[in-house]
Length: 260
Ligand code: MLT
Image (cartoon, rainbow, N blue to C red):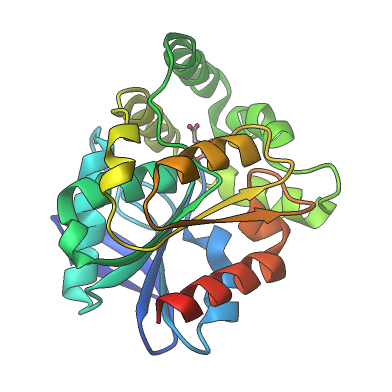
């Protein structure tokens, strides 16, 4: 675990293992700790890097940003760590950022993993929900955001320890970062038109019980990909890597084994 200055940001990251570099990008409003089980479980064969995005976790606080800024941070981090070309995986918001990365740094990608995420932009209704979430955050801080989100994120069958860990990470998120991220997600572009031109192997994964970006969303992305493959994780919701770490690690290992 260490800090690095990349793209003008002080970023914290967890890194373990040797071999091909795999960078895992967390969802909202989480941080790199959501990937602890992947860092442990995959580092026998891969160099696994799980950063805290700017403003999140232990990374430096920041002004408003776009998802493209966050993709630039990841590229800066990977360059500084000598981790290019890389396999990039992202969960939900992390998936949006991975798609932003594709549009800017396709030549530096070996493979892509889009986990519990989607390619389309926010609808008008979703944009207005972002503003309501900002009000919720201003009134009740990160705890109120965790209260609002957690019931939608985790499958019924997932243990209380998963909910407790996700809550702990979410409540650590600074309210200013929650606002910045909500605005960045609200203003993100539609990445669907990029999917057919993705030239690298792409794993699309979703928890079977993901209430936000479930199997049908994953299948819709898969149809647009030239080199896509699908993994549906049973007994998991939107936080599948935390809910079913071993099943997710098995799918990632199988995918990366094929990618070589
Ligand atoms: C996430 O898990 O990162 C969020 O559900 C993404 C979003 O709010 O669109």
